Image 1 (cartoon, rainbow, N blue to C red):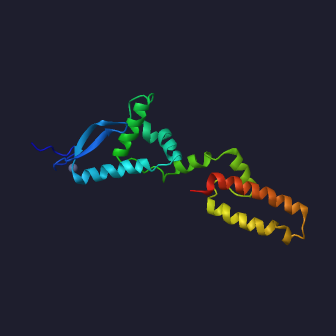
Image 2: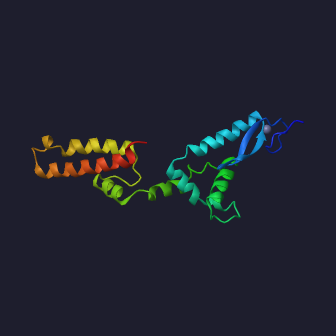
Length: 171
Ligand SMILES: [Zn+2]
C-alpha cells in the first residue's frame, strides 16, 4: 500500500517524514519530495530568525489572532510558531510594524551614544561608521591646534562609537 503525500490536494506518494511538532519528532506526517522541500525551506527559515525577529514574531498579532488557544505553555508557543511557519505566514519582517518594533529595541545607552554622535535612533551601522570617520576628522586635535575642548569631545565620541560597535557593529 502506497501512502499519499499529506500536503493539501497532493496526490503524489509520501516518502519523506516531516515532524508535526517542532519539539516532538516522534510524530510525523509523510510528504512527497516536492513538498518535503517546501517544508524544509520553512523549517530553515524559522531556524535562521534572529532573537529580535523571534521576539517580534511572538508579540505579533499575526501570530496570535490565528489561534484560539491560550498562550500559556511552551507547547503552545511552538505549535503556533510551527503552524505559522508551515503556512508561510512569515513574510512580516518587511512591514512597517517590524521597523517600528526594531526602533524601540534600542537601549538607553545606545540612544545616548547615537545622540553624542548626532545620529538618529534608526541609524544603521554603515551610517554610524561613516559618521564616526567624519567626526574624527572634524575633532581631531591635529586639526584643531591641540585644543583640549576638541580632544575631550573626540574622546566622548570614541566611547559612543565603541558602545555602538558592541551592540550594532557585528551583524
Ligand atoms: Zn506532495
